Image (cartoon, rainbow, N blue to C red; front, side, top):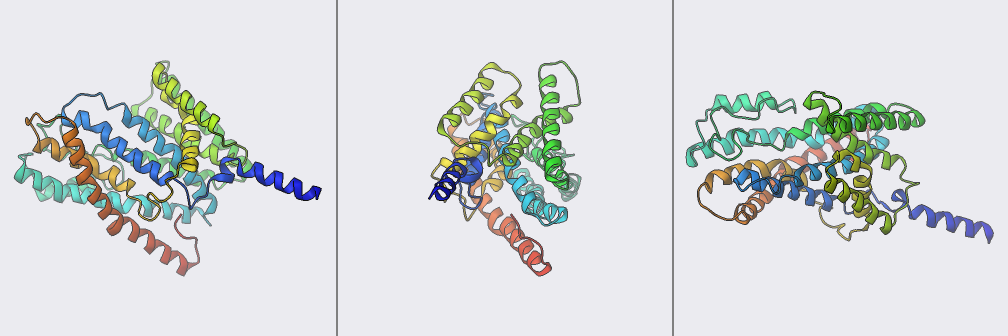
Length: 360
């Protein structure tokens, strides 16, 4: 009897933690990512439509939420991978095919159509090919097609959301390499990297040090990402409780209100994202068809096209916002059905034939 009581008590305590309650295959994290992708779209609506910058601050916080969730889930993927090569194959297959396709769609779809029908500026096949090739390495070395989009409120840039993907993959590299270490050392190295990223981001944010902008951005995003990773590493010891969720939300709100460096909200943001992923009753949203990535990568060019089409029409911001959602969702569905899901299924088939783990 006593051993049974002890086992039941341990079971209750285990299920009261993040690790005990988060089912990797049945949670609301896909719904959260969909919401964050739509929040990025909303954040861009004011600036891209020429309505002002009131919604712009929403964007960095949405991206921070993405990185916190990724930090947890990618660490889980690394833990399940049979090798570092298997891990990187999964990550490349998940983000790169759709990234490459959206480059092609913008260069040879959006751009020539906008040039022909919306007076977006001159386009040529050579210019489109240059745009694809210069950016194909995941780093947006050339965000413009020369001569195009010069008269919109946010000139030149066809897809201002893709820049985060290079930083995302840099975080994957960190997880992949740290995962090669023994568990104890991996945790210690992760803590050191997180403290280092936090330090650089905070000191840069308050003006005490000056580093290149790319490094400062990496430090901030890595700070959020590793906050999620550390939550994964301590998942069986971090309690899940509504009071802690409220406290985490209050900390994030305080960081927003006071204007201190945003990365200080990393641990609270990570906890809030994972707790909401467990507690929200939205498990079916995106469980079979995850269009959040497609919305993220297609919304910006759609909004630039709408900025051209609705120029000088004097319509309220809600009009391009609703139209952007209505036009982006079908593109996101197409990306999932035609590119993302087939790529992952092909990888799973290849993995099963070669005896490696499937795509997480």
